[in-house]
Image 1: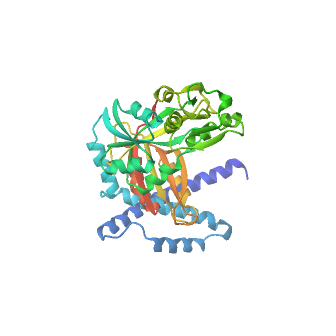
Image 2 (image 1 turned 180 degrees about the horizontal axis):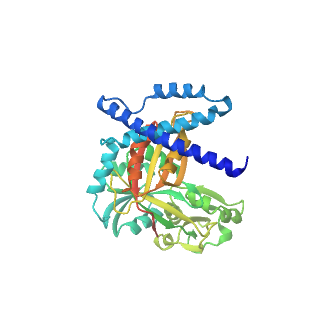
Image 3 (image 1 turned 90 degrees about the vertical axis):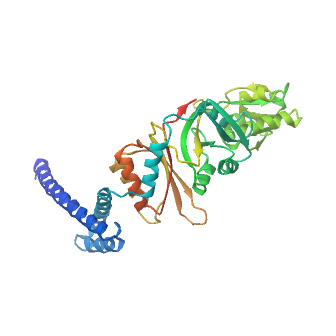
Length: 383
């Protein structure tokens, strides 16, 4: 049989399938209307399990796995269609719509912003890029940044989320899961590290280098070239490293920090741009207790805890694909106290105003055990 004849057969079958698919979705819609009228939930797991077992016995054994996948997807589509016919939406849907309507059209030019570290920190630079007149308050840890906002000391917090060289700041993911905060804006800051020393210190005199673990990772090649006799000490922040060197009273220490910290702490710069890659950027997120969604929001961050069974992640990813939503980032983090179970962090490229996004908000809560909406912001500003 020729390829042309075989393709004609496939086309005929597809036409029949599409007609039956539309008929099936219409009936699914009628079932959804019945469930709404009688206060029944959209999801009926017992019925779906029975149906899958029945389907397994209706096809040849070698085709059974494919039939199960097909009908599993059909069940998802039917539930989504039933929910789309319902005028009532999830509480989260209402919160997002309320935030869209009540958030001011312009981001505030001035605010009190919590940053981790000391003066000269990269988070301070990110705050100055995002706000015209930020009042920056400094805290010793990322946890303290969250606590300062919770206590009402600050309106916003500025936190590093990911670096193009060193990867994600995983601690931030953990804190975002533990605390109920929202991402309202983001800034992409070019990071250029310098080797700063007390006045008059030469390179060959250095015996210890202070910096933050991310900066140390970003400058691994340079640190290796300094030699094995140089000790690398991790501190909480690159600006804190410069401050520690300035206050140490030693003539054998150095800091990897921003160049602006040289003048700020009265240090010399032995070398600029010591990071391994020149294309070194950190994305900072601006967080708030209040859900705010500003015009132009086209990047949404969510966290999901999925059922611990085969295909859970695949279902979510296929749903993004079906709705035409581009995935910018996928990160997994182990769940504390739950062996071999993970939380998944997603960055989605989709307008907050699109029907696809609003449908996704309702549908995702049925696909996962826990769904945390972190917020929607415009694409990161460049600094």
